[in-house]
Image (tube, rainbow, N blue to C red; front, side, top):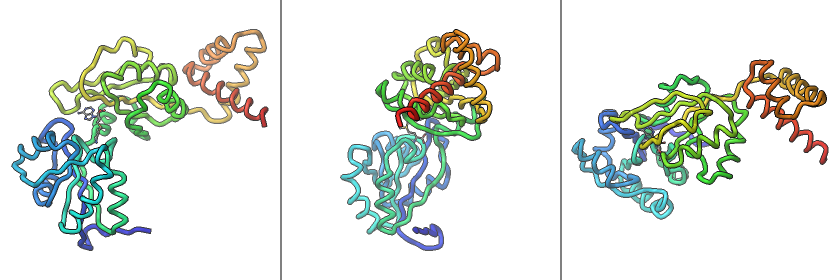
Length: 289
Ligand code: SAM
């Protein structure tokens, strides 16, 4: 068990400081004070962070910390903490460690008995889900999906029966491929695209995954919010599968049976399809044992 009484015991501390996701005013007074008073600030891209620090006349020395030098930097950061009261970690935008590097650093600092303290503030997923018409509770934040189609499909399939609202980060050049992929796995669920939050070209698009091919080319930074799977209790799942099986026995093709059950029960086709595929897979596995 590790217990940290952040403000009762004084120890050298690494501060995880949240910085704006676009609008430079979105930074707390406490974040600015902490950045000013630190002995050193580690930043993902020192050129990007230098602009923020210049805007607020902060002249604390900046050093780089990114995914390519994360391991090489560990010793240096631990050494800085040995000789300083406070060191800060910031990312290019938003909250450090949220789809940004730092996990191993946190582990190393904890193992040395130093403190870690978060100065909370902006993060892109929160305004995106607040602005969406899709349920804000409960939600599951995934971050970036794998870039390759096969790996991405595999992850999406593991999320297909999840009833929580799903939140993803995505790069604009992969947007259409990802949405197509999501439509293939999730079906026509509600979709919100939150783009360039807090910036001049902020845009919120509320649509559905079946309109993926009508979405224009979008630039900038993007958060995707997807409606969760429709929840069905076990009893109605079994009943629904029995219904599909009966229609197949009556001569309908699997797909037509699924479509008919979905229509008769006012369910999305994808919900019936996924439940039936899961049933078939379980059956196959049981027969192999
Ligand atoms: N640490 C950041 C946070 O707390 O949200 C996330 C860093 S991650 C490397 C960058 C991704 O966050 C972008 O590709 C985009 O998906 C999302 N993002 C960051 N700023 C955004 C903004 N202003 N509007 C929409 N999405 C944003």
